[in-house]
Image (cartoon, rainbow, N blue to C red; front, side, top):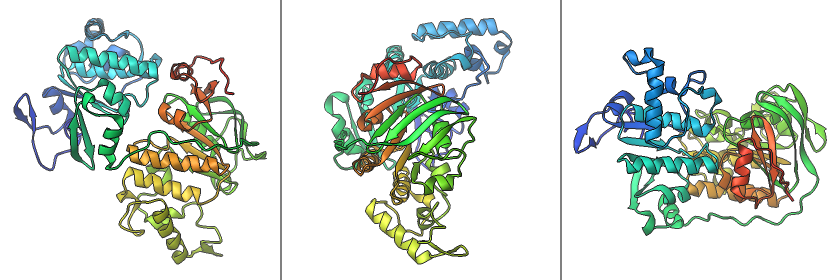
Length: 453
């Protein structure tokens, strides 16, 4: 889709629009050909109004007449059923409303084909329903929607036709009435996939992680505990303090106040290395930025954070290369990491295999606490199944697990207890069978009265 939108140049092939071959070298070319795209991460100017963002970048006198643009944007929104105020500032909007602005930007430019890249990844259930209503209305007016998603339930709900890609190739085309979630998943990964893994029965023990009044960055006083044998899921729309929470626990962000305790031991303001040595394993939300050094070999990445352990180095910092390579070879085999060998760079791995390498390295330390932040982001259903099973194995072994995820399906599949995070505050606590709509309200800031049992 990035080739279609002019972000990447094609190596070969052709693009036809309305039966005519077109050459697309930039997003401007794509828009001129009637193709628009809404990316997963929005590109908006927060202090500007909705209308100002919609017309931003267009040439001509309309930029000098905000009242006229307000009216035109209002008419466009009304035509397609978008509930939004053109005069509202983007910084005051919800994530779902920001997405509507991005769609309106494309429609304002007259596109007939609209590409949506993982459009529900940052939406609550209610916002997803509203988006689908808008998409159906766009379809009724003759627009073509390309809906890119790994959420198969949503694909089956919204699509008229489904095309399945695997490793950059089309492996199947079908219609919702002719297929199923299980069949689509098998087409995607080439084997049957389990969507619900059985949670192991464990005895939930004493508190392992305690957060007391945590403040800093977006965090506004977080009180939370995670006990041994328990998975606590933190649900929230992205940008509400999730990364700050993980970074604060790992000593990657200075705190303005509050405490982090592991087994009653104060870890506040402790170095990341000491926190890891105390028994915390970390799966960061950005595996390429925080989890791996992409241009280093797999064996070098396999020992990151432990390179000074006596098992892997001599006094004076001399690495025991042979022993490290033996570790890496074993981890590749145990975690089914598909690679050409331990000498290859981490950059060459697929996203799923990069995540497996991080999992393998972190779980090798026999942690007391596993902190998993967005652990399946960008992974296919097969890799998701693998990551989920590993997390559940940690629960079965009595580990405490803090799961931070924007994927409600993941939160429900794994959690023993759910809390919602909004603008740096915990707004609710729920049992794992709480209605999704109720959890969704907590994700939008409604303080919940429900308590987990």
